[in-house]
Amino acid sequence: MSAGLTSLLLFSAFPLLTVWPLAFVCLIPLMSAVKGLSARKTFLYSWLSGTLFYIGLLHWIVFNPAVEGWVKPLLYLGVVLIGFYLSLYFALSFALAKWLAARTRMPFWAWLAICIPTLDLLRSQGLLGFPWGSLGYALVPWTNGIQMASLTGVYGLTCWAVMANGLLFDLGSRIWGRRAGLSETFRKPKTIAMALGLVLLLGLPPWLGSLAVRSVDKLSSSSPRLNTALIQGNIQQGLRWDREFQRFNFEEYKRLTLEASAQKVGLVVWPETALPFYLRFQPQYGNQMRQLADGTNSLILTGVPDMAVDENEKELYFNAAFLFAPGRGLLGSYAKSRLVPFGETFPLKDNIPFLKNVNFGEGEWTAGSDTIVFETPEAALSCLICFESIFPGIARKQVNRGSKILVNITNDGWFGRSGAAMQHAQMAVLRAVENRRAVARCANSGISMFILPTGKVLQPTPLYQQTVTVESLPLLSVRTFYGRFGDVFQYGLILIIALGALIPLVKKRP
Image 1 (cartoon, rainbow, N blue to C red):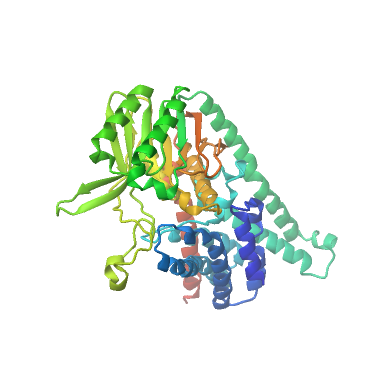
Image 2 (tube, rainbow, N blue to C red):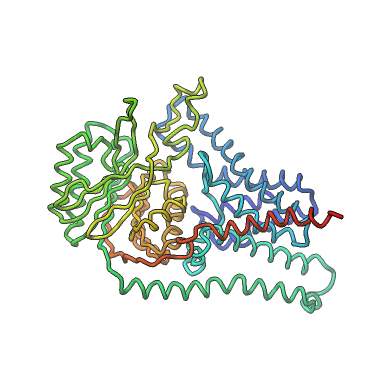
């Protein structure tokens, strides 16, 4: 029962429901359920809770319209298996915290605040890396509260939320778990210290965050700016890839771009695969893109598929972005370097004979070799394509290479009206805060939006509507602690875990 309640509270903290304050209490039922249990039983309880949470959070996976009909039931099984897999990290964090607490004087909840973000970091690594659902992302709507991400990244926010859960749980246990009255309980120095610690823990970060917001806003007001337009074409998923609708598709984006150009924009952004054909090999459309950039006197960044041939004459297909500049034509291209597992590529599929010829709806893309920054007179800008926005390291690398504005293009039409579109969009907000860069996020069917370097969201668009939005974005050059040093906060937590595991062994030596 308690495991299920934690699953429900975790699910409710994220979109669609977005009751983000629940992030500070959602783990308390599970903490109560595993109190007094062994590390092994703690693992089982938390694995069940995590599985229920991830199945609920990722239910939108079954909406993929590209999947063959007979494969559709396998997607339901796939969601369950993904839930099993992701919850392993959640369960391991609880079990590890329980094991460390038994070996040291630190309480279980304090170790949990260290272990959960550590396992979240591990969950984001490798071919199957998928940091979706990290607790820190639930706090994104609280702009003042998330400013510490410029120091610690999302893992610091997760640590903060888990620590608040732990202090509340411990304090509550002291108040309701004893026969002494409330007034007598609060006369105890340890209880008073915990209560004051909780007040500081919940009050100090957002207060400091409000000061940071004012400072960044002041810096932004005096910085150069780039008038940017987001073109949300809302082209129906099935029609986007139909050859007969290529002309219609192009003309729609051209019309909307001309509409935006009336506001003298310096950058126009079209979404991921806005032009669903190989633009590089269709000169008639390439010429029209150059003419459109010249006619509007704007940079135009669009998502397109791209192709190349390697040294073995094998054709390679890329999910790419092209940048057209007025008077210069195609200025450069970027091929997505981090592909969606089981969506844009099927890891190790060629090594599993009976899966080779099954269409699970995944693409056949090749990962690009590296990220790049487009250098233009208007601004140095970089592009995050879809899923790349959920990996802090990619945006950080782009900013360290000189990017002054982050552009995120995506096609979230696969998600339907589930919470996935907002979950995906919220993760991009932390990329803005971590690096103090404005983000222009353009989606085919929503949610398109502008994100200021403070994480404040401007002009979020509704789902499945055609829109044109324009905003003047600041071009900051400031470097953050997180931008310079990356996940050093998290590495510090890993060091604490190592010390917690090793010190008792050293003490036992004669």
